Length: 165
Image 1 (cartoon, helix red, strand yellow):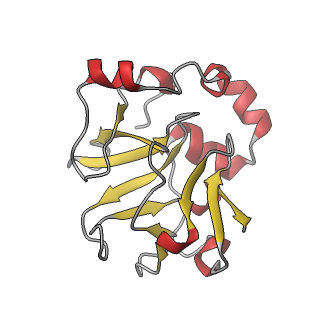
Image 2: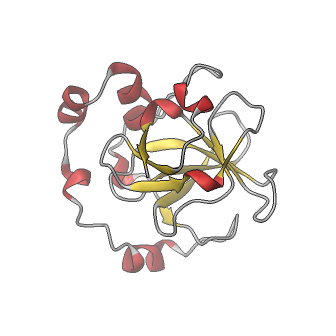
Image 3: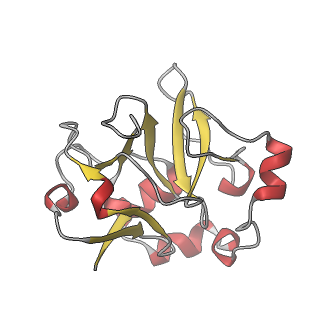
């Protein structure tokens, strides 16, 4: 069952560059430079008007797109992947790789672009990541990625926009 609480109240932490390392909730509040973002003040109805239906479900209600359906799987140009909700740059194209999962995957995020929380939706804890500016859901973070980080940011392509260099 999806959490219908406003995203701003769902216990996000600002994550460090190292998987699993997060600031305490109190420190995260103090360190959250984007806390006053107007994107966090939009109502659910406003988001629904702004986004395509599939993107709205993922970005605002933590749905998941079907694997293999994202046009971004085959995006190999130089550029930046940004949040569809607020245009915050999240990933550089040189951090994208083919994980074989059916979702666009990255081994490194742009510093400060993501917020994380623990997700128990499937009964086991996973690290879920969201855009740090609008708190829109993007995917999950795993520690089975390639070098140099060993991380895999498994992304829902429907909530990413590619901006060519």
